[in-house]
Image (tube, rainbow, N blue to C red):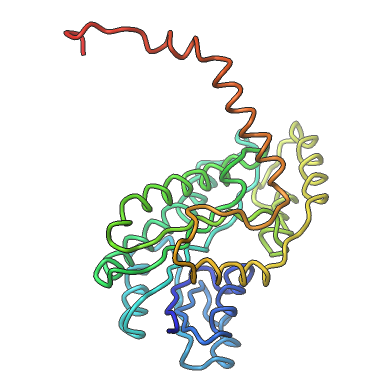
Length: 283
């Protein structure tokens, strides 16, 4: 049976590849983008299988209306892909309040609005699969990515919490953690050119150079391969809560998690000391 998808951020990158992979196998997709002209080729190629919707995910009312239109148009919703997002690059000291708020409005709140809009339909059906795009940056922290990484860490918690809350309704949740894909926001963090910070502080130029060198050494993943992998996840009867897309960050993640466990173990005595002891009447 074909599936009905709702995908945000469908104009390019991983989102575009997800949409094309779903359509090419006979599924139907409500594809959203801030400019629907970017979806014209999809509509021309796949006709009524595509519902192109103009959507800025920071507009809560528009999100609810788009999800409603998709449900009314196709009759049901099977796969919700929260893909819209971007990377705000800059040292924490450099970031303005607007930088931070914009990052969270798109990456976190936009995802929340989509989930809140879609969940009543999924609960009513007793089925559905929420795909929350995160990042390897939702698992580790590196210099100059504080705003982006904080938004992705928040999405990790959001996705895991949601999975606990909706399991009894027959709704599945998977958090996808890509690491280094050849997309406009992945291969081209010309975020690395610091384009999002109007007046970069020269004091952080050394960090910028090291980050650029690190990024240049990471293997670039193939978005088309990622799309094929996503199809396997949405077709699985027992999909993972979390899954890495790409192996570039796996060795680093192994070391990061080993270091965290060691630090917690090394400081267990202090942890117990910090808990203290309260008499029953003090509780």
